[in-house]
Length: 449
Image 1 (cartoon, helix red, strand yellow):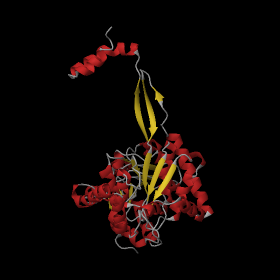
Image 2: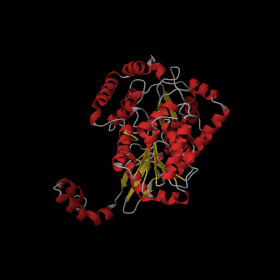
Image 3: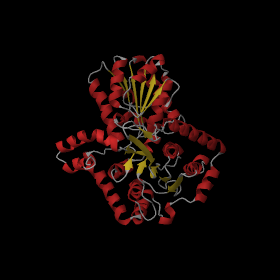
Image 4: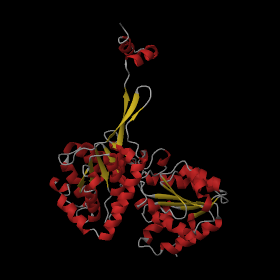
């Protein structure tokens, strides 16, 4: 039986419950933001050095750090993945998997179209708003031996729906010196979508802070973008934070996390499976809030049983010990209050017929999964909302990535002679109150006969 998991369980009737609960908040925030605060200036300085090197030395700096961190020596001509390589990778994708990928793409596209706000609007009073797609964006896809096609889908499809014409995907060459063929296959599929053939995707086998720098500032080989989105490790996220202002970013996102709210109506085996689905990310945070002591004990028993069956059992157990908890509260209202403080990336609610009502009281969460049949995996791969979500309590002020994040708005003001005359006195009075005579004069001169 896995050792140390009994310490996961805490209860409101135990000493220092609030303190231990607060420690959950701190560990989540610290882990999810990778320590981007003042206590971690060393990491920040290292990333600043990489960014400055890429600014000054361009492709040569990217080559140097790719060899140093990824163990792959590239030339600038090898940064980009050719169309023939993309096509070859696409042909290697198993037909069944390709079918699932296409269905996922369609689901995401449908949802993003339904929530898209980017239609120009004329308002009353001589004003309006114009929406324009961001011309060129970059998407960071983490490098791993396992493919992560969902990251491409969940970032690129919303951008395509928004009308972005140029998408640059970067990923470190950690799969046999290149990018996993399933990721490349998805990029090719999105390139050749009949509806969006005018919205190209470029793929570069570079990653880390050096890739963020190349996207943000441009090199001879990598053209500058105007917004960077997507997940990544502490170096990628720190780099995104530092280039913000030179380019836009989606958010500063850390490792995956879930908070599950469950009562005695929940299935403990299902709840345990949902906890493990996030903890197996290693690092990943999985927290259960409940008002049922019985459920908490049954879930703990299931965790001990199920974790032994996982391929990554050892890493998952360590993650449970460091970043996870099962907390029993006195009542469900206290659960809801604590959940809004935690502001999780994923929030699952498994409380029988009370689930939807509880969801209505949630103010802070990246995505809410309501009911017993809505595990996080449905959102990760399938339902339609992007799985690129705010983490580390930042759901208090950040939102899920969507097509609306890839447009910018321009205010439109169009007054005629009569409309300006009706407003002139008030405008002049306000300008003079601020001591800005030229502002006032620009209106007065149009009123003179």
